[in-house]
Every structure is written in C-alpha cells, then in structure tokens.
Amino acid sequence: MEHVVQIQHPLVKHHLARLRDQSTPSAEFRQIVNRLATLLAYEATTDLALRPVSIETPLTTAACSQLSQRIGIVPILRAGLGMVEPVLNLIPDAEVWHLGFYRDEKTLRPVEYYKKLPDHGAVDVALVLDPMLATGGSAVAAVSAVKSWGAQSVKLLSILGAPEGIAAMKAAHPDTPIFLCAIDSHLNERGFIVPGLGDAGDRTFNARAN
Figure 1: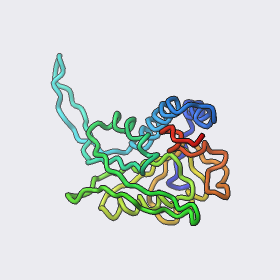
Figure 2: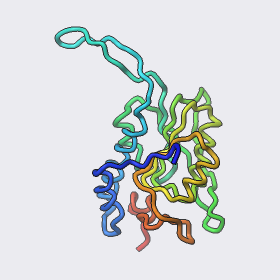
Figure 3: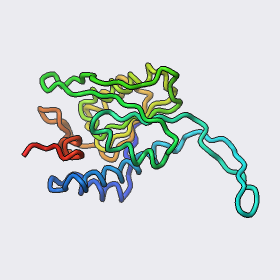
Figure 4: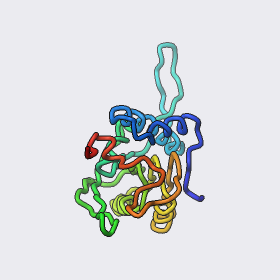
C-alpha cells in the first residue's frame, strides 16, 4: 500500500510475540514498546535532511553531517507516551508536544481533551506517536491538528494497525506516511484490534482492572 510501511525485520517479529502475550508484565511491556519504537523511528527518519559541518577530531578535520530541520515528537496521550523516550534518544534535540484524545465508547469517535502545540511556529518534521492504529479516529484528528499547526512533513508511527484504521488515515491524509510493525486482521465490535495486544495504555501503565 502506498505510504504504508510495515517493517519486515526479524527483531520486530520476535519482540511482537512477547508484546502480544497477555502474561507479559507492564515493566517488560514498556521495555518492548521502547525497542519497537526505536526500530520504527529508525525506519521513519531515513529521509531527514542534513547539513554539512566541519568537525575537529583528535587527529584532523572531518567533513560530517548534522540534522538541519526542526523535528517534533507528538505523542497521542496517553499510550503514545511510552514511545517518546526511545525516539528522543535517537533525536535528543527534538521538541516534544502533546495531543490528548479519548475514544467515546458508544460512537468510537475521538474526543479531544488536551492540545499543547506552540504559537511560535511549527516544526519541519512531526512524528506522531500512537501504538495502536485501530479505528483511526485519534490518528486522523492528531495529524489534522499537526498539519493545521503548519508542520511541513507529518509521519505516523504505530506498533499495530488494523485495516480499518489504515483506510481511515489514507482517506483523510493520503500524503501522510504510516509506519507499522504489523498489520492485524480486523477490529472487533468494541473497536479493538484483533488479534492485537489489548489496551496498550492500560498495559503500559499497569492500569488494568483486576
């Protein structure tokens, strides 16, 4: 599919198996999300622009390159928070801004409850983070908000995606690349990805009901 990148890497498949396992505790779940987000970010940043710089090494002068764009990391609260640290480790100078949505359980539509984007101008590249691209409602709303802010390039990074969410994103934002670790079968009647991994936010923050 155009603008949809599913990472075909043995490490992704290996870590996904443990991530899906319902017996995986929250502490390990967070570690695996961290690893997968790192692999997603690596794939999603291969086209970042560079500028030449001259660096003094202990031996001589070396012609090198550094990032030349303002890069923003935009997690969708709350589950997207678990993907911030690994991306920030790769791009320490990136800015982090937050968008908050919850899903109305009756309509399955996103409801915005928080938006923190600065007034002093948008980043050049925005990486929107949300581990689950399910119905696509929150992702579509988040990308719309970041585009309205003025970001020149917007990319969505998700661990799992459902065909329904991918279709919604492609319909609303056909120019926005989507990076995924896996594309699952479908959504159930509650809007959860099947086979999926459950509620990513609950499992990340150990907030599952007993």
